Image (cartoon, rainbow, N blue to C red; front, top):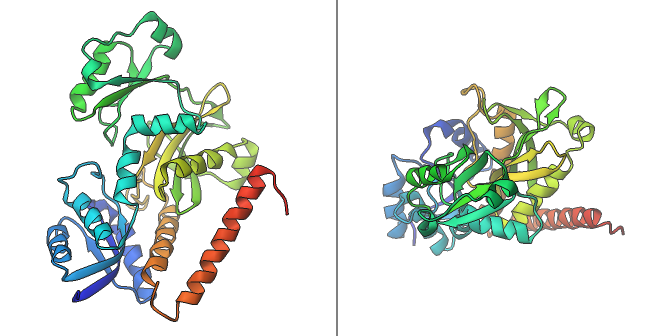
Length: 338
C-alpha cells in the first residue's frame, strides 16, 4: 500500500517551465488535489520510491524531450507510471511512435494530410545516395533535409542542395535511422504577416498562433483573421494529425505556401514550447500558457478524481457532454445535420 498517492505529477527537466508548473500547482491547490513536480532535483528519488511502491501516481503530465531514449530517467518514469496503472499524458508508446518523422509522415500521407513532397533515405544508403536530376526537378533546389529521429532542429538543414548536406545531417543526428529530403515551402504573405503558423493541440482543442520561423515570435490568431485570410484548414489539419497520432498534447507547424495550399511541415512536437512571454522575449503569450495549463489540468483532474465518490456523477456528465460536442463537430464537418 503506497504511503502517498499523488493526483497530478508534472515531469519536466526544464527550469524555464517554472511558470507553467506554478500555475498547475495553483490549480491543484484550489481543487484539493495533491501535486508533485518531478524535475532534475527529485526525479531519480521519485522514480525509486514509485518502483518501491512507496508512492503512487494517478495522472502525470509529461513535458520531457527524450521519449525515444530508454535510458532517460523521465522516459523510465513515464513507463513506470503506466505500468502501475496510472495515466500519462501522453502515453510514452504513442509519444515514441509519433517522434519518428518518417513513420508518421507515411501515416499522414495515407490519411490525406497535406505534407511536402518527401523522399526517405535509410541511414545505410546515405553513402551511395545521389541527388539526381529527377530528384532536383521533383523537389526543387534548395530543399530541406531532416533526420527522422531528433528534436530542437538538430540535423535540420533548410537550404540543402547536395549529398553533402545529407551527410552533414547524419553527422549532427548520428542516432537517426532515416533521413527525409523534402520540398521546401515558401510562406505566402498575409496582410503584413507571413503564412507560417505554430498550432497547439491540447486535449481536443486547437490553439492557432502566427509564428515567425526566424525571430520565433508568437501572436495568437484571432477569429477575425481566420475569416479574413481563410485559415479554417489550420484546425482541420491539426485534428487530422491528432487523429492519426492519437496524441492529446502537441504542437505542429503549418505553412501556407505561395501556391495557396496549406502544408504541415513539423508534424508532432510532444514537448511544445511553454516559455511565457513575460519572462522570454520570443515566448508564448502568457494567456495561451495559462489556457494550456487549464486544459491539461482539467484532463488530468478527470483522471485523478475518478473513484473519489461524490465527484463521479459530475465527471460522467462532463464526459458525456464532451462526447456529444465532439460528435456534433464531426457531424458538421461531414455535412450531417440532425
